[in-house]
Image 1 (cartoon, rainbow, N blue to C red):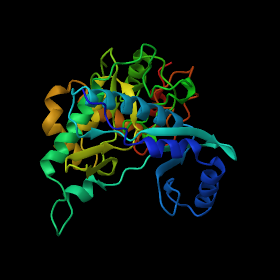
Image 2 (cartoon, rainbow, N blue to C red; image 1 turned 30 degrees about the horizontal axis):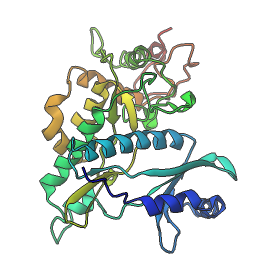
Image 3 (tube, rainbow, N blue to C red; image 1 turned 30 degrees about the vertical axis):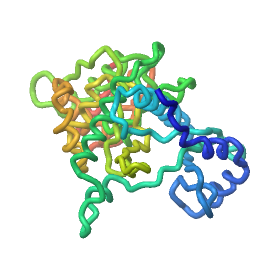
Length: 326
């Protein structure tokens, strides 16, 4: 087999040698001006892409590294679609000037996001619409098959356990309130929520799978970019891993099979929906609606929370107290 060409060699070397002061100086100026938390670097002629954010950005970068390695290995071995790519993470570091900011330096992808690729009116689509959705569905399934680290817990896989908070549309502000040590804790948290608004009778509860899978849970148009290589072959780049976690597969089904105001999940569901479980869809949808109306602590045990709640319209005081199962 002919060795694969290292397309990122020059950019990787540039990133490793790049001045931290130069990058952090730009971040400081951008924050004062309320700019988006990412930019090409150097600004005049970008070679790499820089993202920055809260300390949980480290967990995002670690999940992106896992995805990049899997996809690269599978692609080079001929075991997946050759058009699936993940941007390589070159370097990460806490901002020396402000440790509350974590910085990720990665591969710069030049292309168009899904929305502009398939809805580029009035000119029509830049790329074949069905092929774009096929690639996204294949990428999600490929990541789902990733071997799970033996010490993984529900959430992103990163050495710092305090950063293993799940980011997922199920939760208030799309982030869980605590780190879950195992699937049982996650299940108990979810089942501690729907009791308030359930119809008469037993409330809907989830029975999560006891295995974890790599769940890419932010199926939004702007997270998928497309371009073509020098031979004209269409490439997909999955570019954002802030909502990537190891989760029971029902939580992946929740984002693929539910409607979150974006048309992309509908197209993905048509392709891979039959491979996903539906037994927990109703209960998860119910829990998501209730979690959106209270603080993140709802559903947590006394060990994890003082059960501080915000008022919920239409609920009485005695009903609010039911949120905590002590």
